[in-house]
Length: 387
Image 1 (cartoon, rainbow, N blue to C red):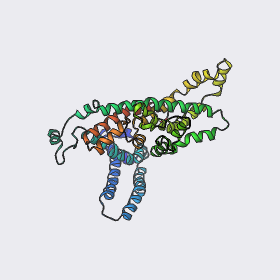
Image 2 (image 1 turned 180 degrees about the vertical axis):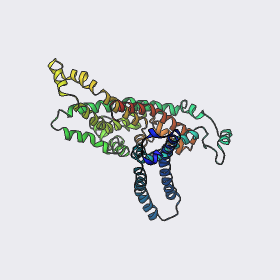
Image 3 (image 1 turned 90 degrees about the vertical axis):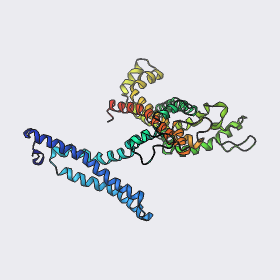
Image 4 (image 1 turned 120 degrees about the vertical axis):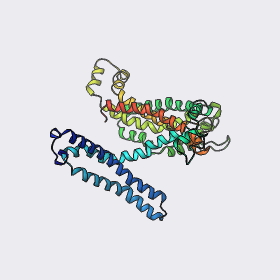
């Protein structure tokens, strides 16, 4: 067959072409399948082995690093021995095959499993029954959990708070990032200023929450204030407050938590905006000044329209962050004082209350909420030839 000889497909008979096509499909499916099976065996050993911890650690290192390298070397060697035409067709699967297998096993299948669990009561699907038997059991509640997600008071409160995170967190991250990018580009200390603004990005959400816990630290009136904010307030003659826990201003106490994400994400926005602003042709800005435009007009009528694609991309990225926000809320308030968001409700229901069905339904709703923003973000990348 031409597949073996490496000649073109034009001289192949229809049967040979069908055979070549089937061989291509089998190889395309087989490479990820074999990679998955080998990785699966390694996970099973690490999970169930009774060996000593040192041996398990050694196997994890060798298997995790050397195993992937060995898989690539074997598959790449096999593909490179095929005719050039087929090497070009199949070699991409060598690179993406293991990644696809891992994503399928640890992302796609768990998502399907989570949706299945969300159709049952707090105990989840009964063990030891077939799918049809599980559907016919008393534990099966259909879409009742999803109805509860959109009707229970605590979930409506979480949705409201997430909307606040999206509106204020995303908006102020964009505004501050853009302002800093414009001003820093005109400063002699551009690199130093950008370094300080970007520095919080090196801190995890948990670490940032701990830092801001100290800033918001509250001591009763009359005692020395350890928290920076209350020290400033009392120094100006005001009354110290437990700011994120200030229930009298609910739900606006969420703003004290949103500040943390703005502090973290402004640096991320600044870097992207700065790169986009540097891409604006200098002749375009100079032409605007010659035509009599002031700096505000140049900013709003030339700069903003020119980097609109970058602004949209950064905005959608920050929206995804705020939709999934968990760490900041959990560390700062644990979801108390009217600060619960969707992710903290999911954790509370699934792991604290043990309500598997309701918790899984919340997780699926959160996933569905993120998908449209993510798709739009990818579409923007494609339009900007990012992929």
